[in-house]
Amino acid sequence: MTEYHMSLSFNSQAEAIIFPVLPATLELKRKGGGKTYDIVGLGQVNVIHARELAEISFESVFPASRDPTVSSKLILDSPIGYVEYIIKWQDSRHPCRFIFQGSNLPINLPVSIEQFDRWEEGGSPGDIRFRLTLKEYVFHAPRKANAPAPRPDERVRPDTYTMLPGDTLRSVSRKLYGTSDRWRDIQTANGISDDQVYRLPVGFVLRLPKE
Image (tube, rainbow, N blue to C red; front, side, top):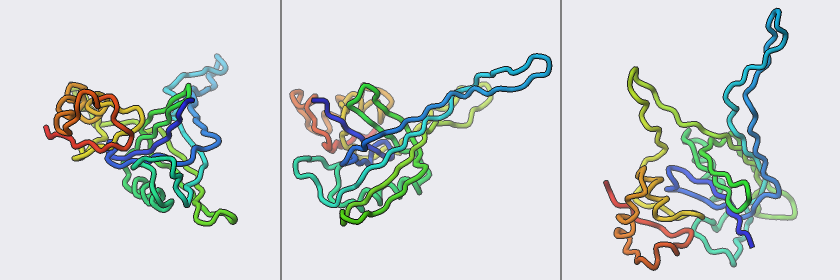
């Protein structure tokens, strides 16, 4: 059976949550950037520009009670905990990362939190229903004349990292150090045996070696 995961993280996944209840519908809009102009003597001309940024939106619920069959440090005990994380990340003016895995159309994008509506409904005391709208974020940096642009970076490298679905030591090394070659250093720093390398559970907290 396919296992679905949907997560939102901040600061290179130093902080992260897994959504406890998957939405019935997840909408991803990604429009083309073509524009039509009226040119005298030629009629309409379609000029193709870069596509517009993707927009992701969905509705779901943060339940008042946690499912006891699900064990993950990224699933919180209280619905208000999710709300506080998302508000803090939205107010930070820094991008987050949205990951949706398990379908034939996986999503892994840096995003800004554009809208976060939440409310309670009668008949489900304590549950917090919400509507979340995310917009694709493009990293950018000033470009010096006659010099390559510096590599954009979303990281303020933390001291620890919490494993998310699909993570391996190689992918963590590449994500945090820009190269997969540091995975052995991470393994050594955490006393992970060779037998455990490919069986680290979601929610496992890694200590990160310094430069």
